Structures are given as structure tokens and as C-alpha cells.
Length: 303
Ligand code: ATP
Figure 1 (cartoon, protein in one colour):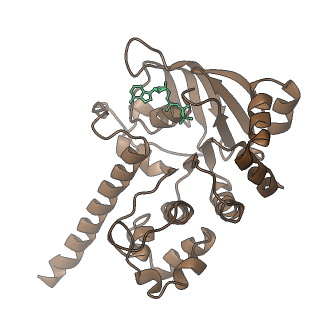
Figure 2 (tube, rainbow, N blue to C red):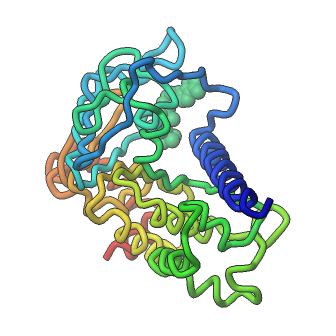
Figure 3 (cartoon, rainbow, N blue to C red):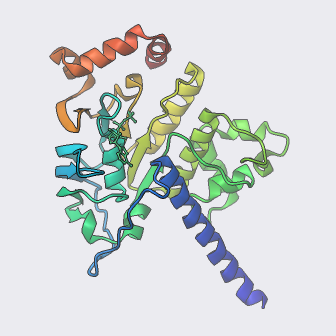
């Protein structure tokens, strides 16, 4: 009986982990009950990530027939590079991330990872290769250690601590009376938005995916928290293909490429400096953030 117990226990853990991760993703994308089922193609193969180059090739998408939300997006994120998508609210930024994660299917065009159309690979392998740091992380009603660990169910305590250190949440955790055993979630200690995001970062560090989607928090964080999160993100972005859905421009100044999306189409691309020189929509959005109260804090944080 005991011999059986351990594998079953591990299976149970893996099942809970996968289920919760999917719930997280679906909440992140606000999709519960909204998403049509997408099945694997009968010939679907596991995705093989060699470098992690992402290509959006003439991608069109409509949630409903009346209105096209993406109108032929062409975008390449080279392996290991960081591309930020910015633009006005409703431009279609999060939709790009949802299509990459294959919560929805492009109505036309194709998304490829290392030359493999995502419609031709298994969804399990696709989602295994992509780590998502959502805006608002949903925590299990369990210990904070457990919440970090389900990034990799078989992680040792040392691995968990190391991930927490890299995510800059370790010191906070050991300052709690029960440390890593502290209960969090709805029935436990309430964590702030910035703390939850760092738990999500620690989880992603443990998962170690070659591709990252970062969905930045819309709400302003105080500048110490923002610095700490930026530092943590820098560590996980290193050498990974990263797609950032950016709301605060100060956090993406260092992106290899910034793409400005407006009404479902890319209207500008470039680095922060070249886009400012173009004096177009990006420069306007940047100016608007400089003028705003929170942007004042952003700028200080960026320097
Ligand atoms: P924000 O910066 O406000 O998060 P965004 O650029 O990420 O905006 P998306 O969330 O991609 O914008 O939405 C693009 C458009 O698609 C919006 O007009 C939105 O109303 C619409 N949309 C988003 N989700 C759905 C849905 N599930 N069903 C129908 N329309 C949707």
C-alpha cells in the first residue's frame, strides 16, 4: 500500500498543479466560461523549442464577427529577446498573448514558435513552454512555500528558497512568524499585489520556461516595490524570449523592441529612443505618462 501511496500522491500533486495553473491562466485572461474549446489537431506533435523565436504572421482575430480586434499583425520576437507591446486601452495587446497561449485561435494568419505553427503542436507542450506572470495572481489556500512550489512540483526546499531569493520575496517570507509555512490565500495571510506578483515570479523561475508572457500590473506600485519587481523580472527575462504586455512605459525602456498597437494594427515599432524621435503615438503616450502623477513616480523609478 505504501509503495502505491507515493506515486499516487505525486500524481495528485501534479494534477492539482496543472489544474490550478490553468485556472490561473484563465483568470488572468478573464476567460472562464467565455472560451470556446480548442482541440489538439489529430496529428499534433509536442512543441520542440530550440531557441524560442516567436512569429505572428499576418494574424487576424475577431471575438465576434462584427468586429475584427487584430487586423493583420506581423511581429517577430527573436529567440532570447524582449518585445514589449504598448498602446491605448482596447488596442488588442492582451489578445495577442491569449492567441499565443492558444486560448483562442487566430481567424487568419499563423503564429509559429521555432517554425512550428502553434495549431500543429499539443496544447500541453505549448503551455509547458510558456510561463505567464499575470497581473493578479490567484493563490492557493495553502502555505506560501507550496504556492511557490507548484511552479515545479518536485522542487526541493532549497530550490524553492533560491527561486524566492531571485524573485526578491525570500526576505519577506522569512520575516513572517511561520516563514515558508505561513498560510496564504483567501483564508490565510493576505498578500499585497506586489507580493503576489513576486510569488508568481518565483513560481515561473521554478518552472523555467523558454518563453515568457509578462502581463504588467495596471495599478501603480510604490517605487520601492516596482524596483524590486523589475529586478526580479530582469533575472527571469535573461536569455528567454519575452513578450511584455506593458501598461507603464517606464518598465519597458530596455526592451529590444517596442511595438505600438492601435485598433488591432501595429502603427509603430522601434526602441524607446527611436520611438521618441519618431514623435508619434509612443512619444505621445510617454508624454502623457510623464504628465501624470503616477508617471512621476515611474520616472524616478526608471532612473
Ligand atoms: P487594456 O490595455 O485595456 O488591457 P488591450 O489592448 O489589452 O486593453 P484587449 O483586452 O486585447 O485590449 O481587447 C481588445 C478588444 O477586444 C477590446 O475592444 C475588447 O473590448 C475586446 N474583447 C476583449 N475580450 C473580449 C471577449 N472575450 N469577447 C469580446 N470582445 C472582447
